[in-house]
Length: 288
Image (cartoon, rainbow, N blue to C red; front, side, top):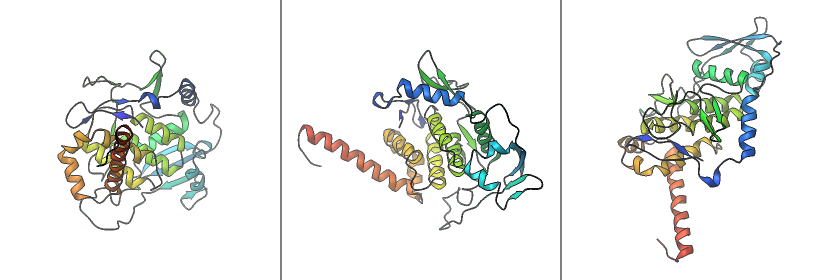
């Protein structure tokens, strides 16, 4: 998990890695090798598959061998949406049925919407092993950074680049890497999930409303067993609790409720307090 600090009332600062969780040289080298070695080789001779994506159809094309790197597409090429004669796969939107109709859930009914911009990221990853902005390794500083990142707000971090994306029906901007992570969950691409989470930790200057909206999206598009992306948001909110505590957006979201996010946040905060109490009791026994 990446430690974050806020440099203004409603903005997230740079992600800083605690020393005890920092990557070893071997881990850095392995990740860099993965980025330098895309999932597919240079020789692509398999048939071209046409993909029709979304409610307002966008047409994509990709090699069958490349698509088969994803368990989802392997099944899709054998499923009801595959027209074998035309080598064409239709990927319509998949809508969920809301358990209750409440006005505060702008994402209800769109949690399975296939956005062409995100689908482009998926294909780019399958071909190149990454998606824009790419994760680059700075040998001079022995650290990772995002391609074309600029620290426009002088926060002292690695900067921000294409951090958000607009998904129709989401009620506002979402963190792009969160949406990619959720798409990777759906398509069975675990390495892409790890990459998206790593890249999101390098973004800075994210507003509270975008963080909370993205957290809701993450909860609606990942299984309850997810222990990475959800935990990332819980840790972020706890570490920046002073900013979230005085945020009108946070107050409104909590009063509205309707998401497991807030109960999980309550449990995480309790665990955090328990840890502090345990440390204090070890030094001088006491209770609260």
